[in-house]
Length: 296
Image 1 (tube, rainbow, N blue to C red):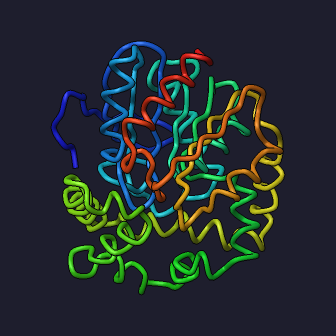
Image 2 (image 1 turned 180 degrees about the vertical axis):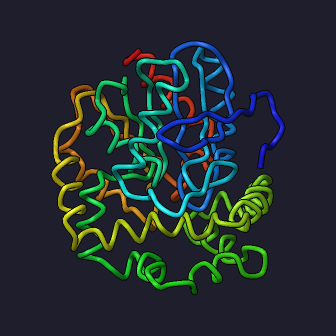
């Protein structure tokens, strides 16, 4: 999954595991955190745009994805936040701008609450605050039917990897805006994401994110997590949301206001679904770059 390009691939040890990163540019550190069902390559457009704008852009394969380690445990919010906080230090920086999509965005929110000293700003794409996401799942379970399916043992892993990841293609097609489905690069995105999901261990690891998020709500670790993230973020937050996102509706992003820091901004992208960084790559890169210039 180390796709060739102008970036450099390397492995970094952080929080007790090995994380694969693709890095490009020099300047203030910007960490790019992908969502499901993707891997670091989903940030290819932002890697080049941020590097050209004078930033050190680093896209990471999150724990369990791509070429990063896939341990049997550690897919809880506390550990995932520790991975990113540790990665900032392992890359030789004191602080970083965090840019996260979906699960990567949820992790960015969590790092901002639990490890504020390593965060300069947060940009989240299709990622309401974790507590908003929890509420939305309880109130509208049909909207998140895939989350319920993912709670089953064994079957979801086979479902995701069967026929060389055919269900990944169906999820991507269902969650994106109609305009991007006809884009020239969409077939390549489908192919690479299917390939990434069929790497041994990835499907199970990806599903563990969902399983902990749901099951922990009835346990003490879930209550501790809710208390830990229930505080205003101390840095500005940029929210970028697709107006056609079927997984995280725009209203849920607006419900994140109580946790926003001073100088935060909200941007809605028309005709865009769940993947703004890929569906509207130029606009998304421009919005992120403009926001970082205000906060650097």
